[in-house]
Image 1: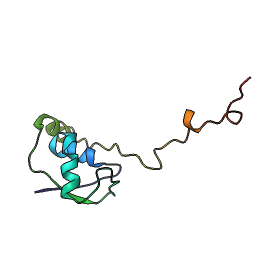
Image 2: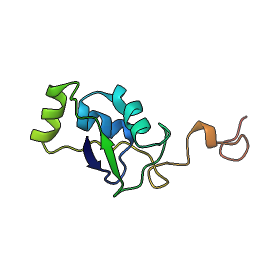
Image 3: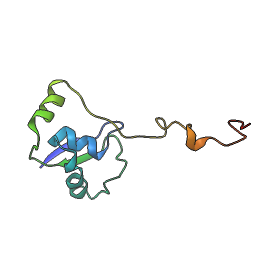
Length: 95
C-alpha cells in the first residue's frame, strides 16, 4: 500500500491521476480511505493509494515534470457571476 499527502486544491481525481495514471481509480482510493468520492479532502491529509500503476506514461510525465494536478474548487476559486446570478431589471434592463 502506498501513501500520498494531499496538497492544496487536490481532489481524489487528482490523486488518482497522479498516483495511478487513471482517473477511474479515484473510487478505489475513496473506498480504501472511507471517503465519499466527492469529498473535499483537506491539505495535509494522508491517503492510502493503490500500488498498481494503470498508466505508467501519465505517472512518469507528472513525476518528470514535477507536476501535481490540483483541480478542486474552493470558495476562493468560485466566481459569483454569470447568467445564473443575473436578475432581470437588476443586472440588466430589458426594453
